[in-house]
Image (cartoon, rainbow, N blue to C red; front, side, top):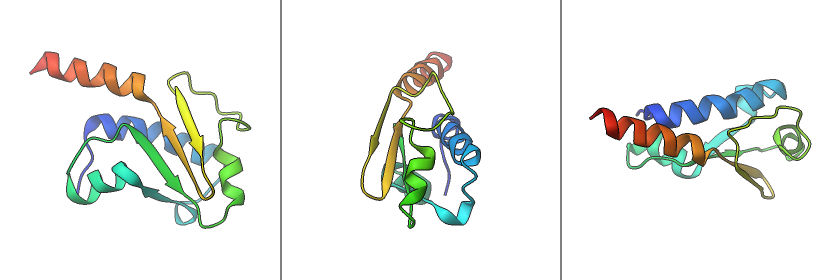
Length: 102
């Protein structure tokens, strides 16, 4: 079980929003490609899917109404019980920097 350096970087950005909203670790869960990468080391995640059992927490982390402004966030999508945060520009930059170092 592990994350790539790229996903860790992006995950830390999402965690910043969760901490700012004062949402504890037992009140959310990772999903989508990020969870697959963690459990199976199968792929790189290009976004962070955060699921909430309590729907009111979604509004606490939504960039639409959250005061945490991250210049690297280029897209987000709100669904019924989860939010997708996409920091694709950061991932692309880090990915190509890592490729150049190989």
